[in-house]
Length: 440
Image (cartoon, rainbow, N blue to C red):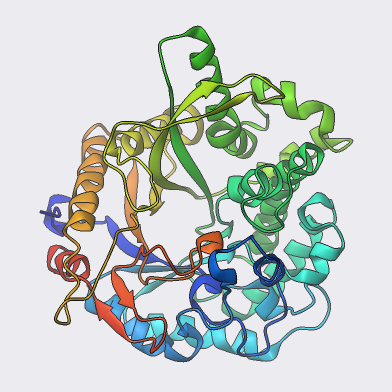
């Protein structure tokens, strides 16, 4: 059973999260081309060469989707805005239709009693900026600050919270070192620059929003529990390094004005000149920290070039993504983040959820595995609240089945089933279970 609202502190907030390119339908409303459109159009990058041109059709169906959020008794909607929808070239001309859409969306949340939690970037870089080097180019920090100011001059007075960049590790490492996401690079020099410039852009965006008088600004990072694959010293060192570039790099910069020494051993020679002078900007003060958490990984040494390690398949039950289900990792990161980085700042679980083999049968999606997943992770949150960790909210990923990036439309994370032909929405059993648990 999912723990009900009454078993959490009275001010604890519950929400659901989505992202713009994954649900809106990027072909509509005057949005510009993104590097995800380019990545998906390149053979071999995305399952079935699928893209976000239509996605869930949220651009036209947003009132229905907001009604579904309100119908599940959520408090907060964590949504993202598309840079290329607001500024099709990434710089210069502004698309009024894009700003109008996000204004309608925010006003629609407020009309339904939902708190708007805005994310300014969830991976859809305008293609013209990718042509200029994208996250490898230091200028992106100021381009992003300009976009932040234009967007937030329109909606910043009505959003409940705002965070600049979703999951910096994915923007930088997954996309520039592993090559799994746009722009699909495998280049350590590009990676080092992206790992730094993403943080710099975060800081410049925070500064821009402070300049507009905005409050309740945060940082959202993703985390994976890195465990040694065996009892050897080599596996322990491999897991520690994985933890460094995945879990510690961005928090250390944002809250300590430093990068982990063990990671700098590999990235240091490739960092942009003068990077040390940017740490004050990267650490621009925020009001809360958000943690996205899904799984643990078993890490062992492989030899070869740095970082010289890889993943080993673990024994725990897994989601459709092949990710082990390990709620203890969420509790661990909430504790460690408060203890080592953020102190008394409010923490939010800004994403947590699972892909499951959801099927409609007689109009019903009986996703009991997702209900159990949510229950176990909410119980983990309760355990650390009881220890005094300042966790103030939990947002599940995701409201809707959507475009799962390089995996196309194959993996379903939603509380609501989407038929990608008709775009019909069918709330799953997990949606109804959460709605009952969150009833006031």
